[in-house]
Length: 482
Ligand code: ME8
Image 1 (cartoon, rainbow, N blue to C red):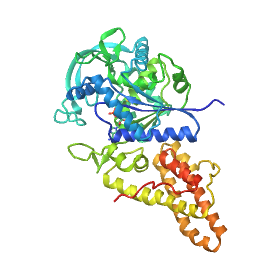
Image 2 (tube, rainbow, N blue to C red; image 1 turned 60 degrees about the vertical axis):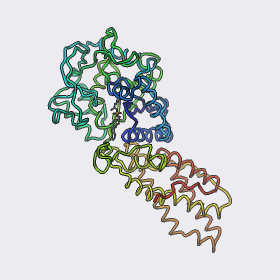
Image 3 (spheres, helix red, strand yellow; image 1 turned 90 degrees about the vertical axis):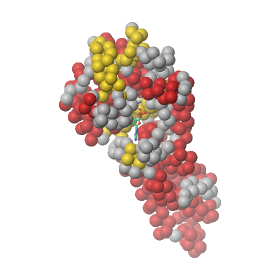
Image 4 (cartoon, rainbow, N blue to C red; image 1 turned 135 degrees about the horizontal axis):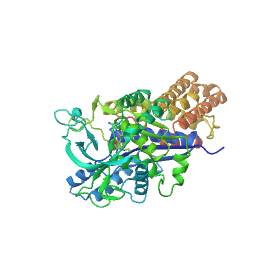
């Protein structure tokens, strides 16, 4: 049988500021799913992330710091990879949309396909452009003349653009979403996007006149018209196949997109329309296969409110990482934020969860068991692979990473109770062999728990397993925080 494949992408991030908690969330959720597929489902995986660079807001941020945009970009992208490294994100490729070798040939090839299908046409257009969204918005979206999401006054633009005939694909895309040929998860998001189709999809402005203050190398040129660059969402969405070599050396594209049934995008709820309407429209126009699944997660708030500098409730992922470590941050995001709804994070709740679930929970349990093992057992052992519990695989196959961890924590609670009930520390005094057998069994279950933690907490996974094999106490995994 042919080896099974799994292709997963994160959104590509805007490098106009450093990454925030929402970015850390979308990437951690993605990484957990990929690690599960790579390690346990034993599929050949390909995990793509990257940065969305051809944007006005990046140019604005660079200028504000007095930096050349391309220099500014390199610095920010370095910081992105730094954060991903600390978060233990196991991506295979980081695509940058200013990459003229990796990205541009594919973006141009795709554009040419849309032209061949008769879906690109020129039109004079007037509208309100919000740089925050990198999209046109309408008069009725405004509150006090401002974009309600970004609090900025949009720019009135009148220009001649190339348009993409998205309207033509309304019915095709709608059918595919209804039938789950293009699966939108969860169902609430599927309903939300389908209601947009009721009004019919509008054609989209797909290019912008090249701006005088954009350096060479920024903005993918429209083929045959150097005065225009591709609209940033047109160029950004194509990253999912350009990175695989579409339009240049397309071996990976064939392997992970064209012939692979298991290809998915993870995105946040604010960019659903781009992924479930514009992107499928582009692929249909080009005669290319659509993604199979789009997993749409919610937003992270803090104290029930959007994180914002004015409210002072911004939590920087780097800050949590340096205080609590990689596994703790991954744990919180995977267990305490639902992948399907909005979730909340405050410093107080993080600490509470850390102390309860990690310091007193997993950390204390490992220390207790290994103390007993080290004292009473002669050597360490590694249990046979027992396979994955059904509750665990069911949760992860349905992307419910929080449920999978709930299941693991239930096993942790049971194991804790087992120590109390069987009282091996007493038994060894009266019947040494019976006591040793109990302790041995405890180490075996602890080992299995550590195995199940692999996709979520790669460090704890290794440290606990190593301690059991070497029959020693693990280092203090999660020191209590006061
Ligand atoms: O949208 N909680 O980039 P981006 C959870 N470049 N997720 C959040 C969030 C929050 N508070 N805030 C943002 C872009 N996100 C485009 C994508 S893909 C072809 C182009 C999520 O840097 C947001 O939903 O603004 C999105 O999925 C991701 O962070 C990247 O946001």
